Image 1 (spheres, rainbow, N blue to C red):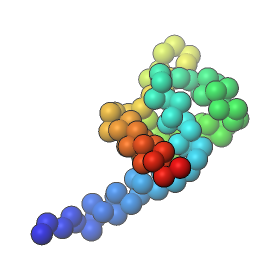
Image 2 (tube, rainbow, N blue to C red):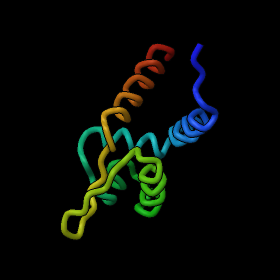
Image 3 (cartoon, rainbow, N blue to C red):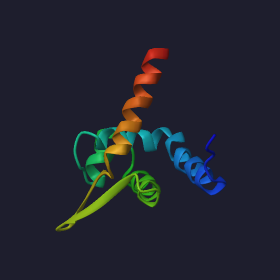
Image 4 (spheres, one colour):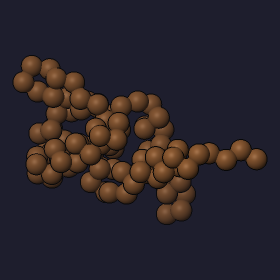
Length: 98
């Protein structure tokens, strides 16, 4: 039987904690469609720009989203396919239960 290291599992625990906030999940959900800037995310979710910026900081720190500066704007997008897969599988699971 193979066991993962304690450090790796602690990192996984911290990673999954990010998914424990509905606002962060809503941001990730809207970003699965296309890259958006803060004001576009704010408008789509009807949440203040400051709240969106705060949550994007958390999502970036956890490597769930990435930012690309285009002129005066910063576009945010899902960091990689793994994140989209996690969202998709989680949503499929919850949809089965509901």
